[in-house]
Length: 337
Ligand code: PHE
Image 1 (cartoon, rainbow, N blue to C red):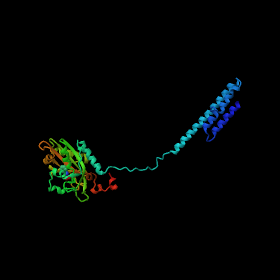
Image 2: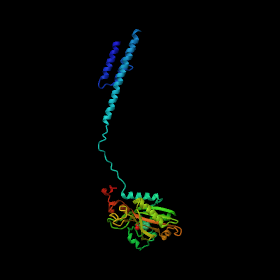
Image 3: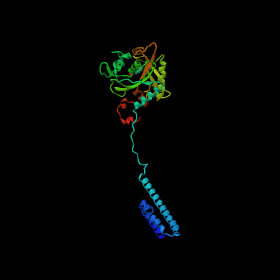
Image 4: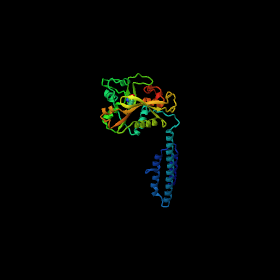
């Protein structure tokens, strides 16, 4: 019996040495319920009482040795499998990546958002109006009757006699005042149209941003303070603003507003064409007729309005010298922003 145990041990250990040994099969064959070692133990009844413990002890040792060898082989196999997998799934972090091309906002959209943020910070809300507009809102309600010379500079595209593509964002002033009672504090960005030929500074489609404030006791100094705050946030802390008398039919008094050149600080350079100042907008106190047209009593309320060209502000800000670049979708241009 002792020899039989030794044989089992030798055979089991030898099988476990084989390069691709099936460890589970070895376990069943030698240690399983119907395995060879179990068979030997069953035969122990035939032994003498003196021999039984000796052979029992030996059988236990043999089982322990086989189990230990099995565990070693299983562990080695697991480690090898893991190493193989790691080798297979190795990541080469030095390999050149696949570049995803991510787009970004158009420079005009960026400038618009930036301007909106500044005015929202001063308590303004954003109002929108239609691009296809009635003659009434675009002109008449703004104190520009038929045959008024101001219509010449804002010639636009007509859909019918009474319906046109708006030539300015000012009609949104009227739409807001008709619906809302003061206090009113809105800005209104959007597309406008004029029948201008396309050149470096003109486009039949461009963008404006309108501003309107109406309340009791609003004065020209509120307009100046608001525009100065805007200009400093948009063009830098040291920016100065300058009002030049002007005429708009829907504001009285009216002004054109310049900002000191943010490149040269006012000395005169290429960007401001030697002027030291750059014109950015038109503004004024809302004309009493316009307030009345919208059902607001000019004896009680007053207000200011301003309107600026987004292209102009953006061109000034980024030193862009041709308005056509905004609409051509040339990536060599757009990529720079
Ligand atoms: N709508 C005027 C323009 O397009 C600008 C403006 C707006 C002037 C508001 C005064 C007040 O020229």
